[in-house]
Image 1 (tube, rainbow, N blue to C red):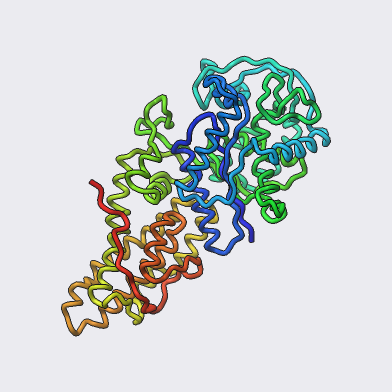
Image 2 (cartoon, one colour):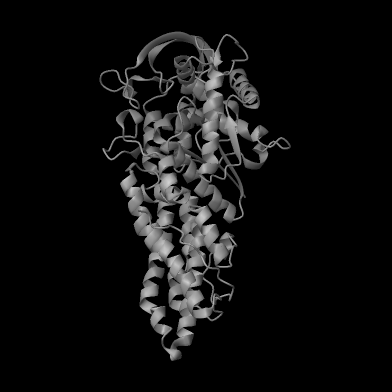
Length: 501
């Protein structure tokens, strides 16, 4: 089976921020999990480099748009290994191969009769690079996303006949109620379609920074159509030796933020229909990360949590865990450094980290570093029964936070087990040797299973721990509580999450 997952491509008119990290980490969790299950996985991310916002930002700096794009694209590229993201390719929309494929696909849309030339007049947000229809505009003629005044534009454009796809899109939503997830965003997209679709601008005549329209070189494609096609174009050249589209298209999941819902749930499927390309399986829409003041994070508001600051203080795995744990994936949620510290201390250090340290230390103290080969505790095994299947079911629906919660319930169960069995007391009783062996074997086995399941969330930490336990196998089939310990050597381990001052 193939599994193709994408993030949105990130706009290069500014530097990477927490929102970019959040979406990337979520996609990486799903990609890593599917690789563990033996799926043929392709994970795509990259940068969106055309359009008016980039041209305007470059003009403000007195540099060429390509220079600005090159500089900021490198920052996004550098973010990926910093987040320990396992993306298979990083696309840039200034790649020549991407531009040629965009022209090829949109020429097909044109040849199929889905474009026409006309005059556009309406309200435009330069930050969104989007023309707004009347029911989207806030009171005071403001952009609903950026809350800035909209500009009145009149220009000759090529139009995409979006209205032609009113009924096909309605049919899509009737036939595939999980095309957009979660359901509240499905309802939002459905409502937008039900309100009636209007034709939209496909090209811009007054802008030069973009992909040239092949049938009318005086125009460039409107940035959103260029950008949306990246999910399809990337597969055609990511591997120089193979066109990956037959292997991976259609995409299994597009992971996006809710501020770009309209483009991905209405424009994107209509565009694919117009080009005769198969539609993706799912578009999963996550919410906003909010500052402590309850407003969407913004540098201008001073409520931004810096992902690099979090990683510097607590480590990459702590950031990955926090973002998937603290905000239910799919909804809005407030984030802040105080909350990061709290999760780090209470859950990572005190619960998982302490559990690992105690388990390893007791195997060394009481059994000279060799895990007992006796039978594990059947009562504890019962608590793990079906966990692997439950986690897989949740992650099949991209419910990353819910999957993490059911794993973490077992982390807490193992900590209670330590207190219930009190190995330090068993060790003082010569008649309790078998009980002690069973307790230690059960703890090693429980920590091993949980670490395999937690690997997509905290790959660096779990790899260290599994190697210390002498059980580096990350295969998802191995995440079953075994009936007996394997007797492998357990290596001493430094604290996984050291206490912070």
